[in-house]
Structure formats: structure tokens, C-alpha cells
Image (cartoon, rainbow, N blue to C red):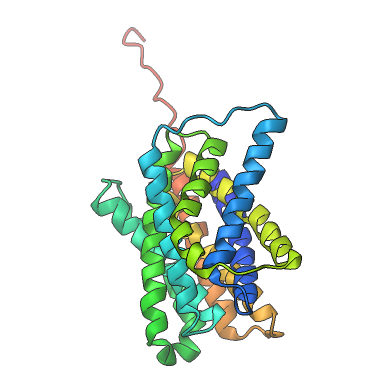
Length: 296
């Protein structure tokens, strides 16, 4: 089952990378970030209401409303920290450094949730982390400014957010979770939206709606992945976000991959592959020993 969870998570992170790129490009212009995020969240809520109406499927009452609100709150803090970091450093650098969050996930799962983390999982995590830093290594020294502070803050809050998601996934139905998650996220953003309110064009709303659809699909896939696997088991596959983010960011500037990129990307995926192989072997059922008849 971990293979399926890993695939869902990797596809989800491709969607997140694309969404972040759209937000970055659009908010670099005339649209305030909080207003754009508000439009995205509002669009998703409307889409989920339309789904419920046309399919005649009632949105269930949440069983863990406080956790969903906390998940929404930490998600908003992640987004704001992430995009503030972009005012100090490039899209590629911030996106890659934000990928320290798998290490935070395992630490939180180990220290506060009592999850058992094997030596293999630690090794796989640090292999993936080495890949991220290897990609950044040619320009790492100029990055130690405000960008690293806000990117690390984004990483921490994203890790907390994913841990909370795993706890919610044990109780909530996916569409119910998505409705309340985006509703609570919009609620958290409202005070900021009021201050940043300004007219928006139809093209701006259309792009935000497109980003909302991708974000909704990604959030749903990620939620299903955490229904299947624990946070510690999925942690190495979170590094796929670094790969997709780097590809999309550098692709805008006709990026020619260097040896640092190939080695770093290889390490990122090697960490996930090692974790998958070892976990599948350890979870394979052991055949019972044949019974010995004492009369024979």
C-alpha cells in the first residue's frame, strides 16, 4: 500500500509545484498575495458546494473540526512564509530549501506522536536532504539571508500541517475534509483580504480558478495518501516536490541541467526508492513454519 501512497503524494506535489508557480507569477504583478489566495479558497468552496448539489451528496459534519481548523491555520502560515521568502531569494532556491520539511515531519512524528522511525527511514531522509542541498550547493552561501529564515519557517509549519492531516485522515471523509479545510483557510485569510481588497479582472479570476482546481486535486490526492500511509513512511517521497519545483522554475529560463542537478535529483529519488524497497520487504508476511507431527 505504501507504493500507492507514494504515487498519490508525488502526483499531488507536481500539482502543488504548478500552483505555486502560478501564484508566484501572478502575485509578482498587481494582485496582492492574500487576495489571490482568498480567491483560490473561495473558488474551491464553491466547486465543492456545486459537487454536493449536483451529485446530491451531503457534506458531512466534521468529526475533528478543531484539527481541521488547525490544519488550515498552519497551511496559511506556510503559504505566507513561503511567499515572503520569495521576496529575498529566487523561486527555485526557496522552493528547494522549503523541502527540509520531511526532516521536521519525522522529528515531530518521533518526538510527539510516538511513531517508530527505523534506521533505514533516517538514512533515506538524509539521502534526499543531501540531494536538495547538492542542487543548491553552487550558490548556497549567498542564500543565508531573510530567505532562509522564512523558508525554514514555511518548512516547519508545512511539516506540522502534514502531521495534523494524517491524524484527520483517520476520521474524516475526503470531500468533507476538503470543504471545511478550504472554508477555514478562507476564514483565516478574511482579515488580510479586507485590507488588501482591490478590483480584479476576469482574467485574474480565471487564472485563480484554474489554480484552485489544481490545488483541490492535489489536496485530495495528498489526503488519500495520508489515509494509506503514516507521515514517517511518506516523508522521503516529499522530496519529489523539490524536483518538480526546480524543473518548473528553471524551465521558465531555459534551464540547462548541470551535474549538480542530476546528482541532486538522483539522491532525492534514491532516498524514496530505498524506503519503498525496505518497507515492502519488512511488511511482507512471513510464511508459517510447517507443523511437525510427533507421531512421525
